[in-house]
Amino acid sequence: MFELYLDTTDIVQLTRFNKALPLKGITTNPTILAKSGRGLKENLKLCAEILGTEARFHVQTISKSTADIIKEAEQLYNLPYDIVVKIPATEIGIAAIKQLNNTPIKVLATAIYSVQQGFLAGLAGADYLAPYVNRIETMGTNGIAVVADIQLLIKQHNLKSVLLPASFKNTHQVIEILKLGVGAITLPPDVTDQLFGHPTVQPAVNQFENDWKKIFDNKLSYET
Ligand code: G3P
Image (cartoon, rainbow, N blue to C red; front, side, top):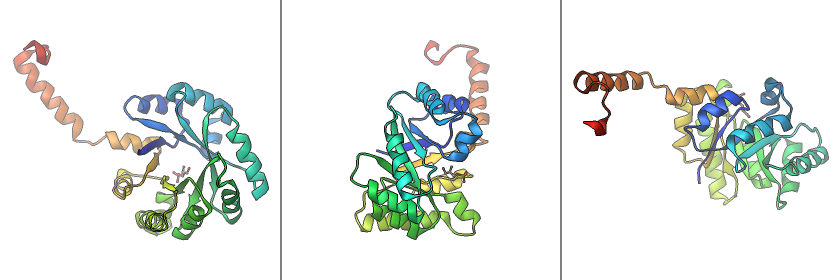
C-alpha cells in the first residue's frame, strides 16, 4: 500500500496535515532535526503524540564509518517506535546497508543523486530508496528520469527496495513522480500546502455558496 510521509518535525504543520492526509509517518534528516531545535527523542515523542503509535519514523545516522553506522542503527532500532534507519548511500553507507540486510532493522538509503547509487543501494538490500528529485534537477539533470530509471532497474532485478523519493519544490515534480507508481513519497510542508492550494478552487466554492444563499439563505441542503 502506498505510503505518504511528511519531511518535517514541525508540530503545527504535522497537526494541520494529519487532519486531511493518511500519513504513514515522517522522514527526518540532521538538518530537519537541527532546525527544530529539539533532539531526536523529544521530536519522536511529540510527533508520535500527533500521528499515533502506528506511525513510522525515518531517522538518519550521523556516524562516519561502516561499523559506527551499524552501531548507531542498532541503537535507533531499539527505540520504542517504528523506526526506519536512513543511511546515506555512500560507499561506507552502502557497506552498512549490506551488513544490515537480513536483520530486522529496516533501512532507507538516502542522499541518492544518481541511478547507479540507487541501484547499488538496492542491490545491497535497502528497504527504501530516497532519490532527491529537486536537488538532482538543481544540478541540471532530469530528476523524474533518474527516479524512473532506478525504479526500472529495481523491477528488472526483482529487488525489494521501495522508492521513496524526497526533495520537492513544486507540485509538478510531485505529480510526475507519483505517475511513475512509486511505493512511497515524502513531501515538505510548503509543497503539501501547494497541493491543496490551487488558486481556482476557493473562488469556485465561494460562488456555490453565494448562489445558494441568494435562494435558500442559511439553510443547509437537507433542510430545503
Ligand atoms: O531528507 C532529504 C530531503 O529532506 C531533502 O530535501 O528540500 O533539503 O532538498 P531538500
